[in-house]
Image (cartoon, rainbow, N blue to C red; front, side, top):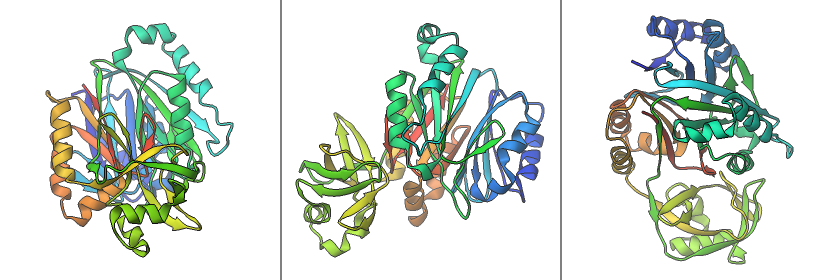
Amino acid sequence: MSVKAISVKASDSVSAVSEFKSKLGDFSPKFILFFASSVYDETNPARALKENFPDCEIIGSTSHSEYCNNEFNSSSISFMAIDKDSVEDVCVKVVENTNSDNADYVTPIEETYKYFGGYDNILNNFDKYVGIVLFESSSKSEEFGMDKIGTQTDILYIGGSSSEMNGTSRVYANGKSYKNSTVMATLKTVDGYKIIKTQSAEVFSDRELTVTKSDVKNRIMYEIDNRPVDEVYAEVLGIDKSHIADYFVSNPLGVLSEDEIFIRTFNEICENGISLHCGIPEGTVIHILKIGDIIHDTKCALDEAIKEKPAGVVNFNCLYRTLEITNKNIVEQYCELFGRYTSIGFSTSGEAYLGHINETSTVLVIN
């Protein structure tokens, strides 16, 4: 077995990592990915992991709730341990001060190329390289970060933004805890990988809308088609403007690219506008969407992409999707889909795939 997924609940990080190590037995990981409830942050699970696995590359994030195989938990840590039979090598980099306009994503990517012997060497084995990116969500820097990553490299990075429950949002790398930072792990896989993006959404209205006034950095939209955003949103949905907040999750916004939908969700009404979880630039054409059947759509996406049992699966699942499956009491059915594989996941504050999105599941499949 080249990948193991283990869920642990304990009183602190030291105890949790001790139990994880015991369950691993003589398994020797090359790379450890973990999603830890924010209640563990004070005892820093990354530090405990590095002390126990000093020769292993380790990254992680705080989480609101965690998935592991066919389980859904809170106040737990989901660990994935991967050995050299599935991941030949790993390069971990951290971008700090991401709440600054001068955050440097160029140097870490250049250092990653150098680590793997240069870009030409990567290009010769391009189908083996994939990146995992974890954003610390409070800096609200994901749009800038994904733009920089996409500009600097052709390696695909997928992942999500840290979330929290009764704690502080953090990302972790090799023993350290970070605020206002991005963690990037570039994996050279042995047998390649697949990436799945799935969202249970379809176009509610064919009416094309253009964003005419917005503040991308602060994620606030003010006008659509040169009119107040709340008026247009209510008009398309056919509801009273005073009730629009009730529809933010069930009817998010969508940016369409051929057959792909990239979701952006409103957050809350603010002065003269509506805030979002992902910024949308002026001039962007959007549609209003409606949320569909998460179980059916996720199963179809997984079954279409995964024909043979993979080594491991990592699910970056939007917190809004988690809240929907818990509210509809369909958690067990959702977890059964991922229980078919060795898998972990967490409820994110946004997902990363060619940009910053939400109400989506971005999935890394390690063959």
